Length: 211
Image (cartoon, one colour):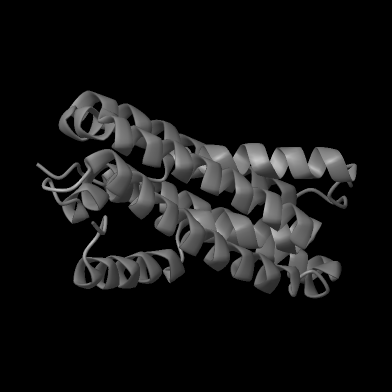
C-alpha cells in the first residue's frame, strides 16, 4: 500500500517548493554567510537549517507536534527565542558596518562550525518552519495509513527539497563575494542585511499560533 496518494503527494510537493523558494530568515542567513565567507560557509549554514528541519520532522512523527502546536506557551517561547536571535544577528551586522576594519578572517573549520551552529538556531526559531512541520505537514497525513511512516516520508521530502533550494541560494550568495570586496558596498550591504534581519525578527514576533 502506498504511503501517500499521488494527488496528495503532488499537492504537497508543490506547497513545499513554494514555501522553500520564498525568501525568509533561512534564505537570508544562507546567502549572507556565502557572501561574507564563501559558499562553503553557506553550505554549512544550510546543513544547520536542515538539521533543525529534521528535528521538527521527528517531533511531528512522534506526536510532539500536536503538543507544541496546541500549547500556546511552548509556541510563544520558541517564537520569541527565534525572534531575539534574528534581532541579534541584525544588530551584529549593523555594528560591523560601522567598524572601520575588515571582518576578521576565521579558520575554515571555525567559520563552518559557526555557520552550522547559527543556521541550526535560525532554523529552530523560524516561525515559518515551526508552523509548517508542526501544523501544516500533519494535514497531509491520512489517518487510515501508517502515520509514523507518512510523517517521516513527507518530512524527508520537505527536507530534501529545502536543502536543494538552500544550496542554490548559497551559490547565489557566493556570487556577491567579489562585490563585497569594495568597502562601501560591503558597508551598505551589512546595514541592509542587518535591517532585514531585524525586520524579520519583528515579523516573527507578530506570528500567531493557528487556533
